[in-house]
Length: 148
Image (cartoon, rainbow, N blue to C red; front, side, top):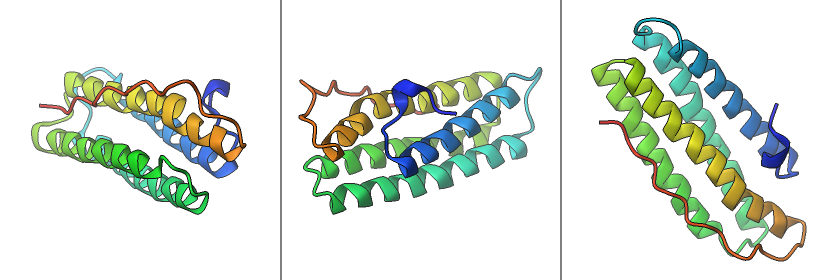
């Protein structure tokens, strides 16, 4: 279930956001177990997220191009930067292990980015699709911090 304030009103986009949020919640429950979770299990969750983020970005950007959304190019760049950070963070977990600290950092990065991105850029696109004027300004999103 997607929180009301994160709904764009576009059924495909909202369904994709919901699937990503559900998987993040499942990963968070695995990360919250005592000890260090088995890295293979964690990487399965992260792979699901990687695939769904990639598919979501393609879908969203296609909708933007089809609608002649003036901000689609910038939006695409934001997706690419996040995806690069996501893949880098995944590689750190694969290489150095799924420690509680590393998973916590990964979760914060993914959850914060998703919420900020949806509340800012995705909802702005939804306003455009509904023919509403743009909001006063989009606040710049902080760059995700990759794991080290």
